[in-house]
Image 1 (tube, rainbow, N blue to C red):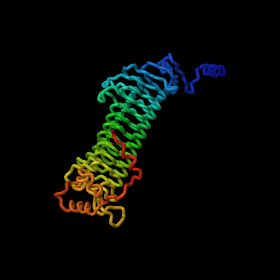
Image 2 (spheres, rainbow, N blue to C red; image 1 turned 90 degrees about the vertical axis):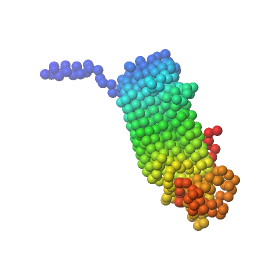
Image 3 (cartoon, rainbow, N blue to C red; image 1 turned 45 degrees about the vertical axis):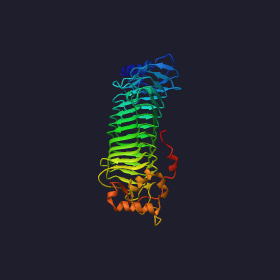
Image 4 (spheres, helix red, strand yellow; image 1 turned 135 degrees about the vertical axis):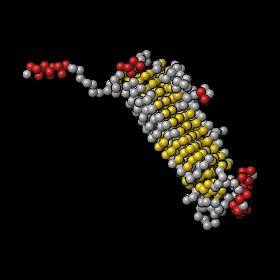
Length: 421
């Protein structure tokens, strides 16, 4: 018995001990990153020193791939540069460039396959790739602090998107700087995500977003694009403190959107500040709409929305409204309209007469700008009252019964020059 126990102990001691700590492997110029990944075990870190590496990487285990002083990884103009097949992968600190240019193959700087959950892509420069990061059916992705610039020499329609999410949940897309892709951030069928602090310019749509719910868009800036932020076929969004300026078409598009909050945004110097189409049961509050050719283009049954405490300042056409009946805004607190010509006889900060978007006097002031010198005069006030009494002089309009006499936004004048020149 004692001899049997002794033999068993010797056998146990002879077995290799399980590795309890993750290892770190360093790759130097001239060595293979792919070989280091193949040799690594789950949880290891592959550390790549500064240099040029021409490889196509496949990461099929949960490891960390970290660049030291930003090594360059080139795909040589074909395929995906990095393809991720495993969960819990980190890619950090690289210049990833020169993917292929096949839209059908979805060539990307980093392509994330289904099931590669909790991918983290941080602090990389993803340049001259067709798609920057393509995430397909992966949960809880984090794309943070990257610079992403597409194949700028291609026509816009032949480029891919900087960040593309399809059928995902729980993504965190934060503090990325995006330019010269087709669309900056493209989102479809992706829920419970946060998009915060991204800067997007010189693309088709800064944000192209559809069929996705329960997401937060906060503190993003989309400028000098064709369209700033396009949110379509969606519900339960919070769209807060974003800036969309100098876009040739719209600043923020709200199309077929319900049960959402759009608050504290600035849309300045766009073709249309807000383009609102088939939008119901939303709250649009505390937004600054300034210096656009059209402040708000509102049509196609966009009703039952709460619209309060917004500033509409120096838009060439404050509201372009297409409907068969009046739409009430400012029911409780009212909005500020820079072209409101009514009086405030009791000094309570609210105009005596309702504001009607683009009534007869509004149209006259745009046709004859010198008439603005008379705003607030008894003669102009009388014209407004006459237009209200004679329906033949008016078309269906947005009507604000509590127009404010002063803007809610203190620093509104800072945005007057934010236009595409």
